Structures are given as C-alpha cells and as structure tokens.
Length: 465
Image (cartoon, rainbow, N blue to C red; front, side, top):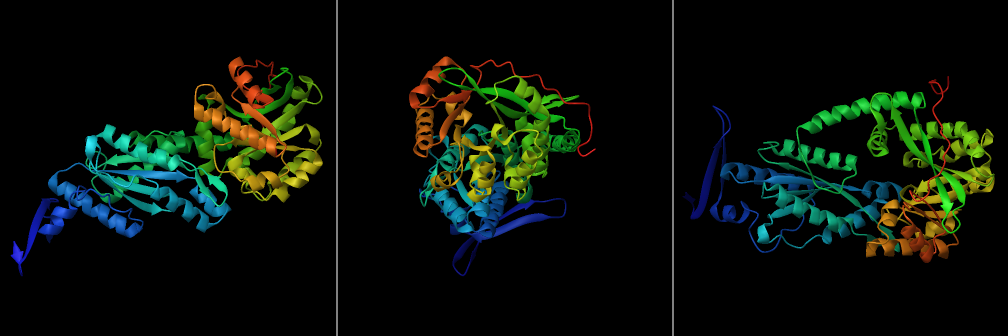
C-alpha cells in the first residue's frame, strides 16, 4: 500500500484466537532491515543495551512472521568484573572496548556461516543475534568470536586475559519471546562457566533440573564444611634434578557419603556463587593444622606444607589476620608453611598485607601463572618466593609451541625477579627434562609416586563444637 507516495508493507501473525501481531513498515526499510543480510558490512556493535534489546525484539518478530530461523548467543566474559572492582572501571571499559573492536569486522554469510549482529547486555555480557538454527554453524561462529575474546589484551604495560563462556538458545525450539530466549541463552552460558568449558553450550530443558541439583550441593556443602568433610589430599613436590621431596602440596577433596568423590571443579563454582568459598577456605586451613603431625612424620624437617587459599578468602579483609592467627596457635611452624595464591587473586591484594606473613617465615607462591591477568610491578613489590606455572601449559609443553613459549616466558620472569619457578603437571620424564632445560628446578605430577600419608577425617563434629 502507499500513502503520500511512500510504499508500505503490512505483515500480520496470529497470537491467539482474538489477537494478532501486525507490523507496518516502509517497504524500502523492510527490505533493508528485516534480514541481517542487508550489506557486505556487518553493523557496528549495538553497545546501547536498550537499543540492542529493541533491535533483538524486531528481529524476532520478523523471524516469526516470515518463519525464518533465528538464535541468540550470550557470551559471559569472566574477569571483567574483577578488573573493574580491583583496578578501575575505566580500565575494564577500555579492555572491553578493545576486545569488541578486535572481533571480525563483518559477517558476509559466505561458506554457510550465518549472518549476525552483536550487542552488549552489561559490563561482562555480550549477545549475538544469528539468522540460523543450524547448531553446527552457530557453534562455529560463536566459537570463533570466543577465540578472539580469549586472546591477551595489553593495557598500560599489563596483560589481561578474559575467559569467555558462551550459551545459545534457538527461537521456537527453546523459547518464543525475546526475554525468555535471552534468559535461556544466559542460562546456557552460566552452565558453560560452571563446567569450565570453552565449548559453546546449547540450552536444554535439563538445565533447570541441574540448577536444582546445584542447590542440593550447596546445602550439602554447608554441612560438609561444618563437619570438615572437605579436606586436603597431598601430593609431593620434588627437586626435578635429584628427585628429593621438598613440599607436600594440598588440594581440595570432598568424599561425599552417597555421591562418592565430588570433583573440585563441580563444588568450587557452587561455593563461589553461594558465598561459601571463604568459609570453606578457613575450614580447610583448620584441617591443615590437624594433618600436620602425619605430614611431618612422613618427610624431612625442611619439607614444607603448601596451602592454596581460595580466591574469595584471599580477597577478604581478614585473610592476613586468619593466617596470622593460624600460625600463632603453634600447630604448624611458620617456616614450614607455604601459601599458594592464584595470580588472578594476587593482583587484588596490597603487597604490604603479605609482608607481615613473610616476616613470620611463611613463604608465598603465585599459583596458576599464565592463566589470567598479571602485573610485573606487583611481582616486583610483593614478598614472593616462587611462581607456579599453570598445569594446562606444562602438560602441553612438548607438543604445543604456544605452551612451550608460555612456560619459557613464565620461568624467565621468575628468574628475572629472583623467584623460584615451579611446575605442576609433570607427568613423565620427558616433561621433567624439558623443564630442567628451561631452568625450572621444582615440580609435581604423576611422574612422582609419593607415599603420601593416609589422612582421613576425624569423627564428625561441627566446627566450633
């Protein structure tokens, strides 16, 4: 139809026995906007949240009217919120802008790849609207964008690493309204984060049941913390050249009476999201006091015990006081204690907070080096003893050029600052030789079969009882 010489088109779609959705638009505008295939250039990212949501609703309405496929992907960027809280909001915004601008400049629809456009839902959430219901094509497209977001970002002399977790919901299959479709895509991204998976996660109805299961784990975890059922298992760290045992390294272990052993990857994320992480870390520190007698009897007097404090505990204002109080109780001599603090958590601490602990004799090791963001200035100022390379890089040392370069760089940084390089994941003699050649002296892994003391939980008794 025409009005004042301008052509319009009307499209209607039934929405029940007495309702219909009708859209009247200029014919020229419709041909340009209804499809994502409007030009060879991909539209600029819609960084205005309301504008993106409005555009998303329009795309869904037109897809429903024309019976065309459409999907929404949500990418959750782990690390942005921490940077904003720890460093500055301006820095996190600059990092986010840099990450977005590095994404592919256009979506040309060739080679079967879907057309898409990008929007930002919040400081750490991106969303894509894709004109496709092909899971393989959607997964390939979203995985490519996630790979770009995973690349390191250099800002002001520091290098930052973001971890993307992606979830997808498909119109018609998973939801029929914009809000529900976005909610389901966000739920799928949250599930990917819970699993620690770099793969694109597609929404399923079972995710609702899995959410209820996590609530059960949270309830049971509170009981396990109270009764000290979550304890430490110990593996040996060795001198890679001589094989001598130098430290017992503690890792979390939960032996559930019905579920059996629950992997840390499953319950730690629940602990973080439910606010139980700091409480869990304190409870496990108390278990270390009970374990030390058995550990000391199984090793030489100079062998230390390494405790990995959880991130939320490290960031708590009482962390230094908790460690100081633990040492003051006298169950474990300060010179026998090693504190492992993840690199990502260390950047949030004032180095002055750690000096008091170092003066007592406890030594501090930066853990999970090269997994997240780091600061060379912090390494220079903090009272550190060593840097422990993340296991993922060590296991790929001999077969992946990138892993070798990361290990070599991490060891070189440690040596430049007068720190001790350490490796986790030393599983065979080939890795041991490669690490020694790079200058790494200490490590732990399957190569060493230690007779770790069999430490079992005492009879159940609530903490503080």
